[in-house]
Image (tube, rainbow, N blue to C red; front, side):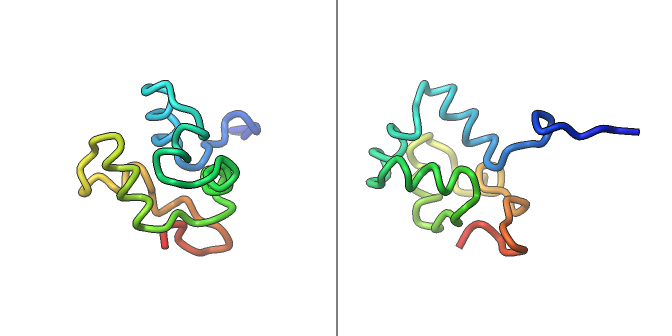
Length: 87
């Protein structure tokens, strides 16, 4: 039997979290780069609110990631109440 612990559950936007670590950026840094507040970014990173598509593209541009990789950074499986998290 496989046990799932809180630590083994994959957090939403894990690739984006990895990019933030790789570039030594905090949520505050990301918020400033996209013109938002730190609490705003936090709400989106925990999937409490969907990322607007225009902000997804801003974040891709920030990390010099091509648009065709959007699904890697903002995956469809990051859902809340059955809705796709990217709007």
